[in-house]
Image 1 (cartoon, protein in one colour):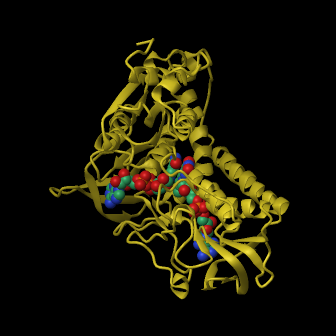
Image 2 (spheres, rainbow, N blue to C red):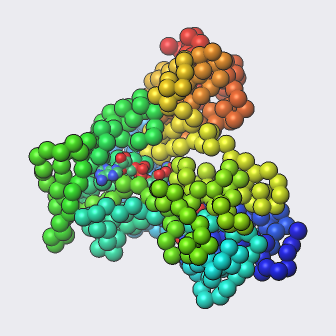
Image 3 (cartoon, helix red, strand yellow):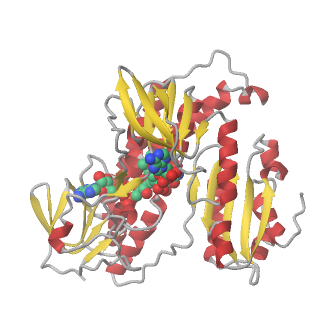
Length: 468
Ligand code: FAD
Ligand code: NAI
């Protein structure tokens, strides 16, 4: 298999979930592999400034709110003289990142993946320059990920802590009095929730008329209700036109999305979270003649091969949801394809989860998408009627199962529940196996669990839930 005309069989550019997983899998398959990354630590956006640190703060702030907001006291857990120790909370975030990025370093050593430290630039389709050194490889996998989309007129400066992106919002050393979040998507709601729980007033300014684009319509409507109930102020159908910084305050100019009278909003901190864009600049793609699509993405085929022989691409830099698990699965598949196996990712079954409380999760088609494709049946079951959720005082949410009216095959599942992110895994597996709603309905689910709501929603597709 090894071709000694090259330094490596595989060079992966980028050590995020797409890149590091591709590198490990390639090495497991006996390929001589290197992985280059410009960061000081492995793990990419996800482990360093994304999934992991955000979940560390979401978890800790959730416990804080349970204690401070009286939810624990209602259960008989009285905590006298409690207070927020933000430095310790931030310390455990840093520890979580350190532990997991160090874990990837260990896995690289274990699997004999060479870690090349530095920015990589293509010289030709089989070589790249990394930190002044030329490395050749038979196959090069581009896994360079994505970065924050800038908003013209609202310039991010994480060091000042006044107008920040997600990285800056994770690192705040004090709770802002008023945090304005621009963008009611995943980052805005997760990080907005963190700082609201810790005491900030949070306003979310969203261009569209609903939060969480891409999710099922019912879920989006319910999300607005739930976040409002939790105290987030929502300014939907609104755009930010500019920001002016004066001292330690930021004044934002807002306008209705459709045009109209302007207003201003003053904040102690502004989080810009309007999406992310693929990292392709400075990569030397012009040198290998690799063109980008209209959205600035590299567009490989279903085997993750680009139009340039020997060059492959996975993760946030290619089309599809910008999610760590999607990048990881593509990383495994690309390595298997390079090794001559048949690596496949079923892009129709990629779950997405918003890790707020409750969590919002879905897989497959939304009800709106499914209706456009044909006749469907929908079963819905409220968490209020689920014994475990009710006992745990978690009344918000529902499970919704969407099935083809003719074949009963499950087309999509949407879920709002405290543990929706965990519950959605069974829906993804069922869909991967081509399950019908009846298959889920007749699967025995342990009692009392939140997952029973999935069974009941599936039973509701055929019109016969028990507990409703
Ligand atoms: P990345 O993780 O972005 O990694 C790419 C790496 O390549 C980076 O380290 C970059 O520095 C490096 N690089 C780029 N160009 C070069 C170059 N030329 N040379 C060398 N190195 C280069 N997803 C989830 O599924 N669940 C979550 O809970 C979640 N939470 C998130 C929270 C936040 C705040 C953010 C910002 C994102 C979150 N995401 C989450 C998204 C997730 O982080 C990304 O989908 C995932 O990291 C993409 O993986 P990737 O390997 O494609 O790219
Ligand atoms: P997003 O695409 O989820 O949300 C951006 C929001 O900003 C959208 O609702 C959009 O309508 C709005 N918007 C765009 N321009 C605007 C403007 N000018 N003014 C006001 N609103 C505007 O992007 P986000 O939240 O930045 O996250 C980026 C990516 O990171 C997502 O694609 C997501 O997949 C990933 N991510 C995933 C997480 C998870 O899986 N739990 C957590 C955090 C991020």
